[in-house]
Image (cartoon, rainbow, N blue to C red; front, side):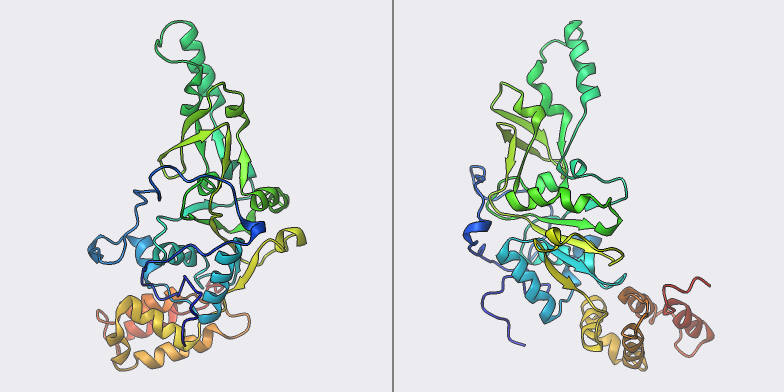
Amino acid sequence: MTTPPWWVYHGTGKPHEWEVPPASRWRTFDGTPPAGGRPTGLGWLVAGEADARVGRRELLAKTYRAEHGEALLVNAAIYLRRPLLVTGGPGVGKSTLAGSIAYELKLGEVLHWPITSRTTLQDGLYRYDAVGRLHAANLDRQGRRPGRGPADVGRYLTLGPLGTALLPADRPRVLLIDEFDKGDIDLANDLLTVFEEGRFPIPELQRMDDQVVTVLTADAKAAAIERGRVECAQFPIVVITSNGERQFPPAFMRRCVKLRIDPPSATKLRRIVQAHLGSQILQKPGMADLLEVFAEKMRKPDAVFATDQLLNVLSLESDVERDSDDWKVLVERLLSPLDDQT
């Protein structure tokens, strides 16, 4: 299928040059990128670098294959500067989609914010070590640590994944908010203002006389915060994953682009297998039939399977004789439903 000319993300796993698309007036933000242009040292490989250096996350990102409809909604979220709410069963690639976007658009390593029942908005924005700073202030007063002053507050403040994603830069960062439905019921509402305004204050820095304070980011870099406020220049590409176990408020939903990733068709499954294991694997006796049968199982109602189950089996193909009892056992067990606990 022909790629529409306005797409920047193609879902092909091939990094390429691209231009940040223009934003609508109501999704344009006022943050100023740092001098010198785009951020550096983001830690992701780009096209042409040796595959031997590709780690696990980069490999998953490189081999992800998006359907046309999935890539369509990714592009819509990028153009609209809206979070992408991704739902679907386990193992369909919800989290890997974020890595695929970051890899293909050369936006650096994904900022990862895993959600639990105890997660708050503050966790995503920044952490302030008030106890550590108080202890340091006591040492200062006792003269046991000369040369430090009250402006050292930046040493005790670390931006979270969301806070880091909102730092001003000329290219957006990719933020993965993972398993959002595990969070407290108020978390979705707490995010509304940040998603709408693209900024947040840091009161601990706003109280300082210094106009600029350097803090640590979620990816262990330094960032200069001016006047105690973080405001993005490009709204981050936010991928929010959910297993569909609960509903979110309409006010939150209207700020998101919704994408459901269904179990892959046989065609998509074939593309995934070829990306991971090469096209030769499916030319071997019985392998193409095995893929077709598994694809049919995955798309049955209430079926709980994951793509990597098939990849696991096929990766063992060269090591196990296909007519042996061991092969039959492996196929039966490795390709069994994930909700089968026996």
